Length: 331
View (spheres, rainbow, N blue to C red):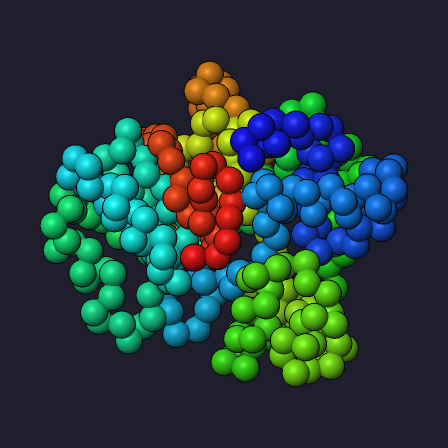
């Protein structure tokens, strides 16, 4: 498996970039933009998926989900306690983006908490025997930006014209919200974000037209979003780091938006706690991260301080478990 991941070539990487921009774009459309055959795109996508380099999936925008809140947790562990605790957390359906960080001394993860849950992780984890320190930071606002659709391996990224040809056309906002009746649809899209309308109709019992309209409405309302779970190590990203920024409140919105447009940044959110911005970055190596920190980050206005916490091992992506550095099946 690992040897397969090292054979990614320029076309593979451009397909990955295309899917970052338009996760549900038809293979024919991607092929036209890249100047290759539709069969080539379809075959290579299936290969990348089979070997655990990527998964396309849909996720609810938890910050906007009614009836729940979304939190980032920092869990300081006793020596030897991080691995079993992280693996146990990864098997839960309410957790995502679980990493062992800080040389193995800390777990960073995200968790969805129902409003009426008074006995869940936020209450139990601080009392766990393996836990030395615990802090919880509610996610208040996610900053979408170019960073989420920029390819991170320089030299293989798509041109501006190719990006423009793939960028979805905005069809206006809606006020749609996720409802209990959407659960079969979301379950199917969590397993495969590129599932066709026929497969989604079968999963939901709706017509293909109803499925297409519902997905379009939820996306337009920012109630759900499509993205890639990418195996960072498989595409040459050896330095994944969480940054905790303390920013002047007057500069918080501008700083978050600016950081979200950095190609090195995968995720940015305003959070509660002593730091008010949480940022996840991906770079080739420590030297590349250092350059990013001393150039782009240094130019962001209003930053009082930044704490950098390097990832040692990813245990779970947004939904899929990570094994041997590759993205596997849902938890």
